[in-house]
Length: 492
Image (cartoon, rainbow, N blue to C red; front, side, top):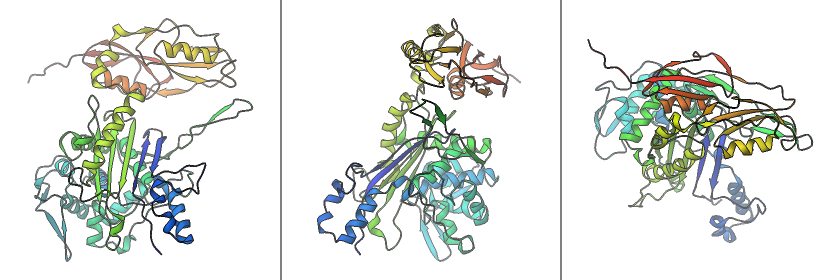
């Protein structure tokens, strides 16, 4: 039977803190209202196919690539290898002379080449990741060993489906552990000759971005009963702690270096801290018609990650002398363009407007919106520059606001959150206060915003005190007052 290969792409955006899938898209797409009509790509050859081939081609067209198709992740998988090595204290991020690249690595009877034409020479782990050096990661994989790698692959959720609930979700393909030899160990260390779904991959990277905690993907956030207007929120589901927070921070630092000083520089976005990793996987022997897969995984901001973005592009033209087929060249600029629009949409302040956003002189007085309808209150607050979170049991167009946090008369920065409680709502959510010490104003703002808390800033520089202690439980919307001071030069 003739195999129909449809080139295209797939992208997933995920909130690493909650597992929420913010966006998911595949291309080529098709008209859901007319599923048996070939899309523009398939239409080019559809009429020449047999009935059996047409059925196969339509089924492939319908597949959600995020969960229904496997791919080789390539060098994005080096983030997993790095995390394992750091967690197991096998290496450190900046150990001089830790790896050596002579352009290839001899493994058993094979010579496995680096992607780069010129050898990278002596490298640290940070430099090896920036260079996306295959020999360095083959050396690292050998140090770690297959048993330890497989233990962490399992912990990262790579051996099972994510249980997202999406139709047709597949699970990965790995060599059985007892058949992993030196060559298999070498190739898996840099993400080849193993297959995962894009959703498995982004969920694992999100665990790295989320202080090492793996979350179950959440496709649907809440359900509304249209008869009663009762809103039921589906739970956020932590799965397990995979790596430590310290290891998480180290890998995020490495990812930032990849963008600032490595092969991932094309994903940079002015005014934002971006971490990333490129990926390029070649087709396995005998399946050359499938072509390369160029990919890029990015996180932002580094200090308090709000989004993980994974883009996979299938079968880019290897003969394209302008754009090439490498993940950094092909996928990196697309990631940059997407994040430049997504981050402002999510309300993540850039460095350019951070000083304005954290300047107390730009504070806005919170209006009194009690005894107004919930819908009216939300409109007033939005017009005043505030965000809202609402607890209401019933129709927001008729139910009145019974209480609000913070109370009227407080002064808050633009973009702060006001929690509204409709009449009869007994819900009150408490959150733990993060440790803000030594953070800049913008970093503290982001850390509190992630918890639905507000900030009151006094001074400039870095946080020295906060009026609620680390891990203290407070109500959502609470104002956390912080005092900032310029760092003092220490003398011996």
